[in-house]
Length: 424
Image (cartoon, rainbow, N blue to C red; front, side, top):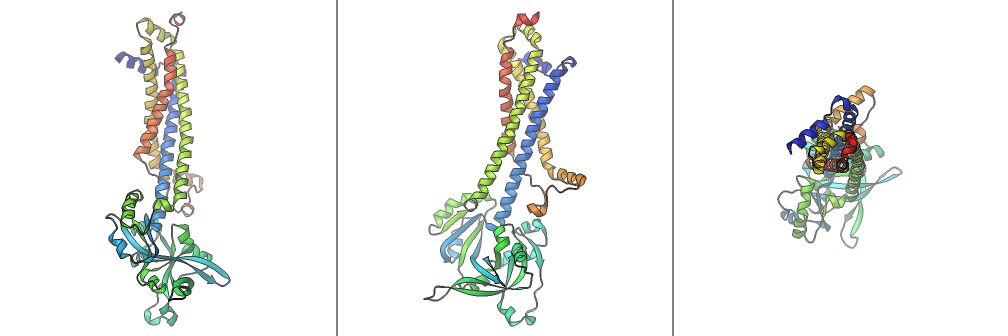
């Protein structure tokens, strides 16, 4: 079969007199390479956005949430957690704040001192927040007065952290007094009674979750237990694994070990978000693979043109003893050659452009003096890109197969060339 490969290479790299064939082949290779390149970049950006946004959201929300039917002691749950999960005991309840004529809801969350310390130590930017385990940015801060200089009201108030959006809507600043009403369990026969809690704003924090940023109020866990009269009990346990996907593996074991508790994964709590990301990925895939299909049509057209230009040579090969299968094999190899070169160029340029996409974005912004990706709008410092091996393998595999299938019909038509007619 060596002579078949030799002829296929010779036909593909035609002489100068076949300029039209060369041009058609180059256009087909360029179109296919461009489509594969765009597929790699698009999939990388979509996956990057999905992973980055998921990690930012889950940094505040948690990978797994365990709740009871009522406030419970966390000791039993903590003992039955599998290895590989990091757990945080949390108190969470809703309340109301009245500021003048404005009434607003709040989401009160009591967390351990370590998380609040992370808020304090986060100096700026998202990167510092990631290092501290809580993805947030302190946008305002105040210094506490010494205990000896505090008033009687300040001694009774609790230090709190509020979301940036809440501070903007309610026109609140650090150091301001803050009071809200929450339901508190009391002695029978009253059961649940509303009570006012007096606090002092210590920090204003930019959270990733809109609900926390707009309604979130954070307190120390011990202060929240004391203020809500819970006596060491908590509302839920928030668990973190190494990755969100790894957390899903712990769900069956947790449901078995904690049958009387409610166990929720991050997917259960973010069904709409997961569906939106999946639909977006699928729609982009359909559009871009349609571009690949059009590129394969160009490849098939160039191969058809090559067969038309080589009718005389095909007839000579038939007279010299080449069978119809040999002729089909020659043009199938040419189709494979076009597909392979297209996949190679598409892979190289797609990976290089994806890796340097944010630098390209900055260059375009510098040249045209126009913002293409505002970090203040997207809450991301740069365009997130995540190159995944299986995505690239799927793109190259599908593109090669589609291009090869498009070459089958022209290749089989080459075997039906009339030998005597084309030798005249």
